[in-house]
Length: 411
Ligand SMILES: *Cc1c(COP(=O)(O)O)cnc(C)c1O
Image (cartoon, rainbow, N blue to C red; front, side):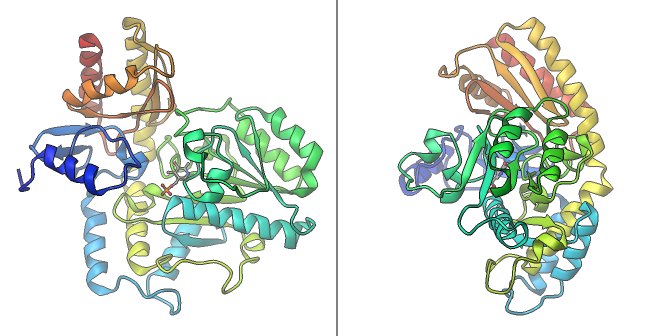
């Protein structure tokens, strides 16, 4: 134990001195390496949350951490009042990697979503010719795009919304995985719609995988109607679903791509919006920015984090292990009535628990898995998300399946 505080005392400090805006499992972590994390008592766990897919490259990846240290010794922050020696190199690298003309760098995911919304609206007025003040952005029901006032304005999660009003207007929500719903709203208001914002898989909503062809059909509709197709790949991107981007499964290239989370491998908050010149060109000096956005530390870390994903072929590994995970869990679905089904892509998966959405069965199951050395958390309803770091190997995955099986047998 490396700390002078016990786990209970550390939990007590957070309870007493921190806002209660999260409901954590009662485990206090102090160390991570690859697919593992350790608590303050030295107990080791498999991490099946990966910080909501921010640590796809594994905890404290040595290459990313070395780059962080190296750059921290040189230069961390200049603000964008000056040029810095890392930004341009990173921008060239990341735009070429994902096939876009330009990136606008930010820090957190929510900031990148806000950035995309602002660009889409400005593009709508200045390029598409939407009358002033009438721009609409279409979103999907059960979305999760972050926590700012504007973003929660178009959420339908009461916890996320209630008493944070008045809300930002100009958003219409349509049913997810329903092409006709989008088609209808476009038929009615297409000339006023700037963009369609969508998660290729709804992560927070419980790993909702849309019907095959849904994203492509929406993309085509957007193209036909001069509407920007905006993919929020903050959680699904960067190899998580078995391809570099989840939209690669349907071979489409969004007009705007939003990245965050694993863009830095968990070492630093780095996010960004990528798009083509004709869209990005609506932004001029003074119209958008962030003190930390595009700082040299972030740029150096993100470039290394992406290079690690490529060098270690993490997308292929996620695809391979994801197939095994779902096949093995499907056997458990047969064996245990507790499990209803499993769904997902690559290593973004969820097990649906056989109980009402209000019951705490999924939570209790997660507590038991924790005792058995595996950390995962329920998402909305009785659904448990399983998203380990992508550096996992097959042997480790089978060990994890055994833990899930053992927990189900004890439950
Ligand atoms: C996590 C997440 C966000 C918000 O990112 P933050 O860094 O927490 O602000 C936005 N969209 C999706 C799909 C996410 O999973």
